[in-house]
Image (cartoon, rainbow, N blue to C red; front, side, top):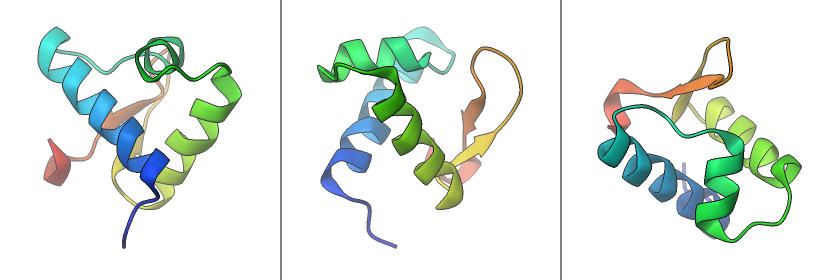
Length: 71
């Protein structure tokens, strides 16, 4: 399934920050890196990426992880 332009941008940010830091970024870190003004917008896109199977839901501050096929 094709991602929207913004979903792809967020996925790229997540993968880049993960590669640099060794852990998935928080919603605030994604928003900051993407120039997105609200966490809720990032949250909506992360939830869509979870539904698409690009990310996996987990618990805790970083409530998702990168799907194994998308690292």
